[in-house]
Image 1: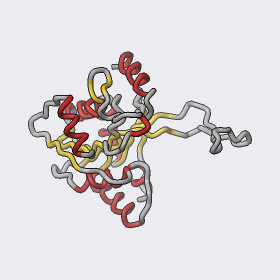
Image 2: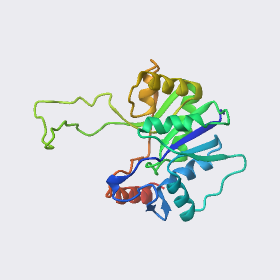
Image 3: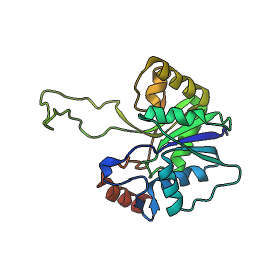
Length: 230
């Protein structure tokens, strides 16, 4: 079983939620704490780099006491303007030499350890894997007034909604982001960065809800899901 380093992206401003969503309590624990707990408990993980402002990191430590397993490296670095800048900041400080790197959004607190393991196992086999789920809703494109464009039909056949964690061979991910930096590209996730290298990514269907908390109403949804699925 190959070991894994983790880059936990938690550098965003979280303004749309009306508060610091990563520190907000969710079933008695900060949102970011739920994410950290999964990685701290994983037998694969040897190193966690939390990309976030120092003020957020100190505030987290003030409200939640998380035990660090023996042999686990846990550190914090500042993020950048774009998500890709934050991931690159995390990549620069990886130190344990783990062959796999997982990147996870700190605003996805419903990650289960089973799905992390499935993604890591797939990355061990394929070199690149990501948590995702098939799109089942009807999709519509709207204009700036939130009015649908009636003649446009979006075929959802073969469409998947991307999640995190996204797990990769460490050297592949580093090369992918070096390419992003050199070309001045803007990517929204690691799958996009790796695809620019011509590498396909294996999608690991998530059997459990793993939504990203973005708006204030998402907390109630997350709590309901946790109550029924955790």
